[in-house]
Length: 564
Image (cartoon, rainbow, N blue to C red; front, side, top):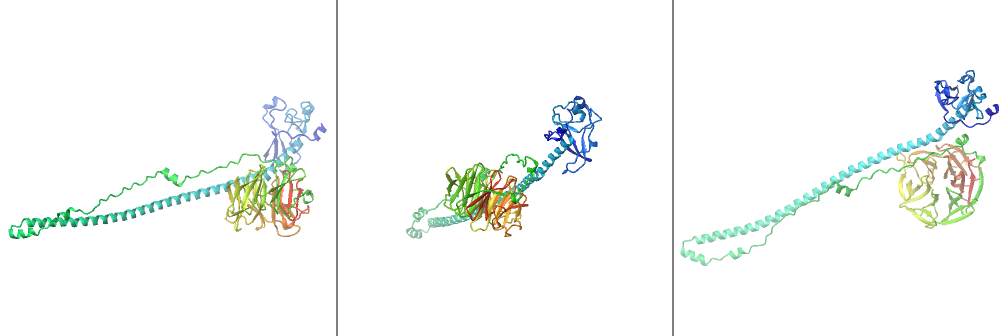
């Protein structure tokens, strides 16, 4: 039995749990099925009580071990994983646990404490920060959405005011036109009235004159007047032109609410882009891997060199599957190196004939590159290069593909006055990141861009001489401005970026011939400076954490064993 106690044993089932009490830690078990049915009726629950800190694993005090319910003179010093019950020496010797892998209960306690410690470390170092980031993104989303709704309300109110002004202006215009037309009509009517009033008065005067002539009894005088009489009836029979006036009806179109909505446009409904439920990766298979950090400088090993054939090698990108490496430099050719030793070379000529600025590989294994000269983002599908995006006034610089198969592109105005990061879903812009909460510019001259495992967006900026990190929602987190203890003691010149499987960020410091390794919070960890690097520029890491470093002023890409 001594050998059985000392050898390594499997961890007991997870029904064993810890609970906190005032005296210390208590290891509790589900005793309902151990040693027969007689114990199912017992109300007391045996436990191991020890004192100590969470970080330590103290030995249990033998006097604190509960007594065996079947053998009161013995204490529970053993544990049977198969039965999931504690046992005393008499229980074991009685044969109840014959051929079972009985363990020392102190070892069980230590193993369970170790499991809790490992889980707590993973929760504190990875899972909790992830949820902190999610909460930060949600808070940012809350502010952004609230702000956008306020903007829409402001626009709606402005629309209402504009519509009122338009209606008032149109009403005023119509009233003025109506007044002018009424004045013209009245003037014309008055002229017509005066003309016919004059004719009518002339007819009346003639009638009166004729009647006076007829009433005259002085025959000699009447004969003289009669002989001088001239008829004016012919003149009055010739009636001058006149006209009737009919005011046109005003029947304005009666606009319904639907007509106005169709003319103005409808309010768009908020779109919710689902982020699928997913499981966070396990950082460890055992405890050592859960807290591992990059190995120290002396452990980095150059596994090989790839000669690119460029005079100046600028950018590298790894495929997600298999052994494929995309490299570009000082020509209009992007080279693909494949095979176990990257000896197979294929050349892709850019669509415009210009030198590419940056390259990346999508989740679907499509090559994407930016063309600064003609302002385009291009994708390689099969043997054909297709233009994905054509920018106006802006120039695309750094590019990377995210875990959700979107593209993050750092772009700059042609006059270099502004820069921002744009997220594309295919060719559609779904996000723009340019300012901090206080409306300061985040970027001046973005050089490289990468997405970290926690979906932070990492950008190296040549002008700022810093690495700027924001959350997925674009909220500023921190900037990293180098470590003064570089071997060459030159100013920090951040270039290529890469992120490894545990969320560390690697930054190529071109002028200091080193690579900085920082954690996801921006804390410096170490330098990679033992691989005879010369002007490290572009970086990428494959799925097994092999690091590829493009040296700017050579034709080499070095493959470095970065992690143990």
